[in-house]
Length: 140
Image (cartoon, rainbow, N blue to C red; front, side, top):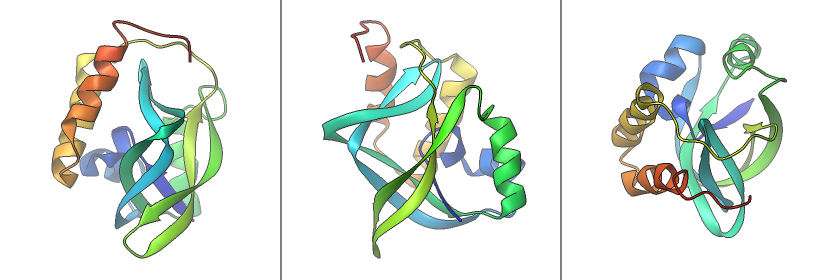
């Protein structure tokens, strides 16, 4: 199964903790969405947006462990999306929050994402902007 990580699991240490058999296939981009924080990372539809992340190939046991980590199905649900990769479009599973309101992430969680963004050389400005947006929330 293919899994697109855009939050804490872009951090290689974090994904290995919860899905040790996950195999990174490389960077990917989710067009038509933007990153938001509802205390934890989430994506919402935005025609002008795009979210960078990592495409992983995961096993069924990895998925089950990630389900527990993401508090599926209570906090996060699952969706299938099409991400852009160097090899072309690919369908992948993502975790998306079941509702929630815009809220800032705690520092430790934000730092996990920041380390992952640095590992993959993603634009850290996107993280900062998503965190800053929690200070001036708008209706999603």
